[in-house]
Length: 149
Image (cartoon, rainbow, N blue to C red; front, side, top):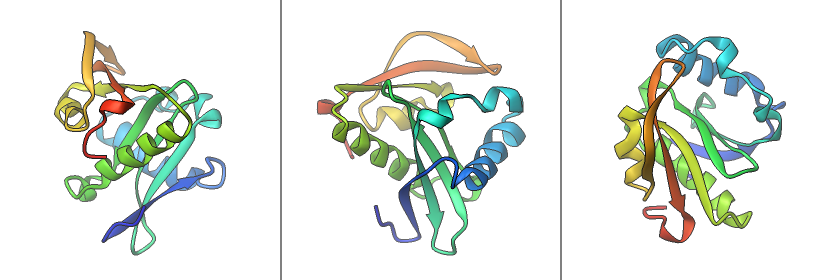
């Protein structure tokens, strides 16, 4: 996927670990105060990872799709928020999910990001819950209903 100021591409987790770690630790561990031991899990080894890279080569965003259809660890560096990076990461993962034949995808959104995901057709369900002391809601998207992607 080619963008004006950045690109989004599929990456191997082991090969791109340093870039992924930089983004996720900057956003989750440092900005949002998520304990590092909660940020990293065995799911990374089995997930499909995407990386957004600025034209300069700087890694600026990342996200993952788990084999069960969960999207997660969506993170964009602060300087790049509001510039389409998150939407490009999400659109790329939705394309991958469609190619893999997933009928729907799921995610756990931070409450302040609900409107972002709603723009793409995700619907919240269930009660709010805390993950790493941050309020979240579960969301789902039936892929035939995906919008703006």
